[in-house]
Image 1 (spheres, rainbow, N blue to C red):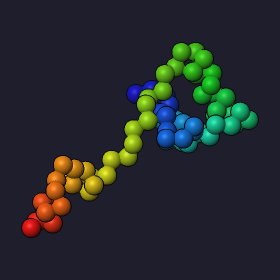
Image 2: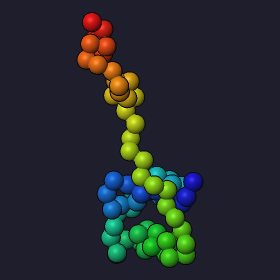
Image 3: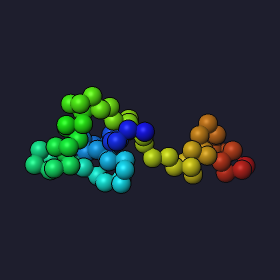
Length: 68
């Protein structure tokens, strides 16, 4: 696990405390992130949220979902 994780936007998440860090050149956390990148850091990729309820319908027909 990297120190940072990408998001669906241009913000990042600091993995140690799940803090959201906006893309703001005046934000000290963003500056620290940019330094980490410059030193060779590679953030974890964006992982879309998993919705088990929707995933349970994947590959099923409407009849199968409705049980008819």
